[in-house]
Length: 143
Image (cartoon, rainbow, N blue to C red; front, side, top):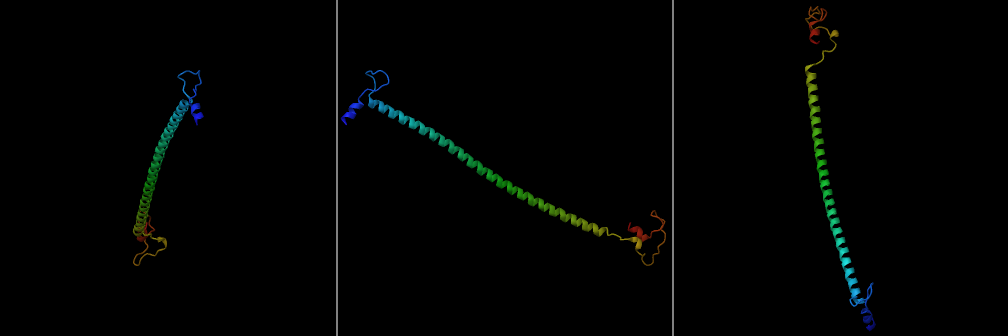
């Protein structure tokens, strides 16, 4: 032990030895301080990087939540729009069907009037109207 203590009192320097040159123990202590300072700087850099990464991760997670909510709302709006469109199409189809039914009731076809016999009491006599003289009054109403 005494030898180790004696060795630690030896002067150490890379330059020429002077009275101010540090001893081996002092040099080891300085090296230890420098090493501790370097570890602190590295720890601070790692901590700073970790804080930055955490901030980025938090922002990314929040952005994903916002996007998920926006997609959900967009899907809901799309579904509502499709339902409204389907309802309007049903209403339109119903209205068209009602119009066709009304048109069929108003404009019943006369059929083939050339083969119909005139009602009792009416004779087929020439009608001097603008359609020519060979049609009956019944035939003219179906035109």
